[in-house]
Image (cartoon, rainbow, N blue to C red; front, side):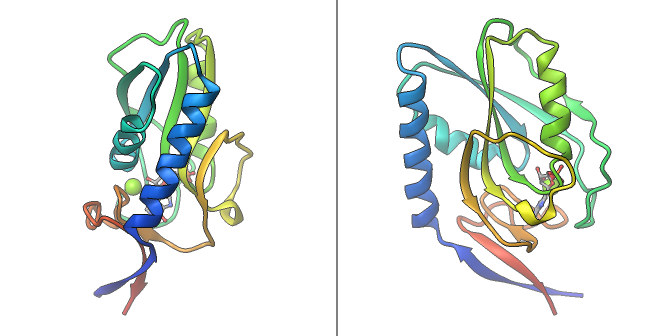
Length: 174
Ligand code: IMP
Ligand code: MG
């Protein structure tokens, strides 16, 4: 089976929106610093672009969680595959995700982080697919709300492909 990719969000729109998010975060944390916890691999591109646009002091760390394997449907089970290198105690943590689908990943992470005594915890996602939500999550910063479609690019993959596309596209199976 092969697939084609239809552009949903071009690079300039993503760029503009990430700049707005960076400005908003810089304003909200004025006089403080932020600890960006970027969730691998999907949020790597978005998280680094966002970090470049934040003007308050930024610390960056990465965490990897289990994802869908090679399919497009969530299993609902989340595991930490790679933990943060740094402690978050006393920090203003922003968890940076690529996309919220069922909500299981962020729901799980918010529980994990609560036990680590951060000063504050907020969630930031590049994309949100609210139609697919199975558990409630409180998101503080959202790039774009999109309809229910499987998307790739800007870090997001389909079977480990297409992460390097500079835009967000919809996968159409031929
Ligand atoms: P959730 O736990 O169901 O909210 O899903 C979160 C994770 O599933 C994301 O971090 C992505 O890695 C993956 N995911 C969900 N929807 C998509 C999609 O449309 N394209 C690529 N990956 C997706
Ligand atoms: Mg994935």
